[in-house]
Image (cartoon, rainbow, N blue to C red; front, side, top):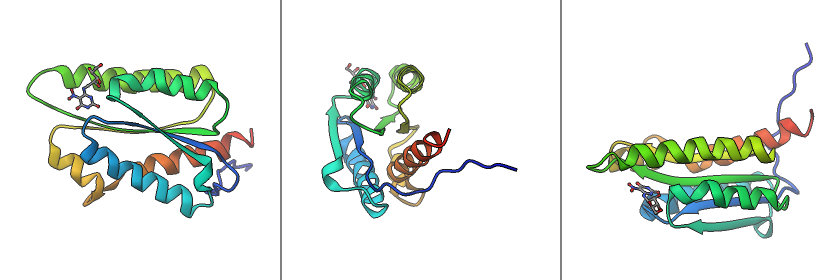
Length: 153
Ligand SMILES: O=c1[nH]c(NC[C@H](O)[C@H](O)[C@H](O)CO)c([N+](=O)[O-])c(=O)[nH]1
């Protein structure tokens, strides 16, 4: 059985990390987790570029622009959409997830989806380096693995 799997080795790879400022109390921890993961898996600090955008809604366009440069092997997208008292949460989270998936398919560049969509701040805190781990780490790991899988196809 021929199996194609990705080595979790970031040596020599260039990454963009795209992070939203909205809820940066949470997002900054996702960024820290993603950077720490990539460095500990062989990436050089000089090969990691961080771009900040206002909110999750702005991420698809920024991700598309980064991907189109062809300067990065992957783009790790990090954000936190936390339900408020209006349906705004639904619109923002729907557009960012659909938009980033579309960018990945259009550009062929691996994009890690590390945008939290939670009902409460507590749930977001749990996923930003506490009880439920760090979704920034998970998004960086998924981006790396997809890069390494696709280079074998
Ligand atoms: O990243 C977020 N943007 C949010 N809104 C801003 C949005 O992403 C845009 O930046 C804004 O609409 C301006 O375009 C959020 N909420 O409104 O709740 C949120 O929780 N997270």
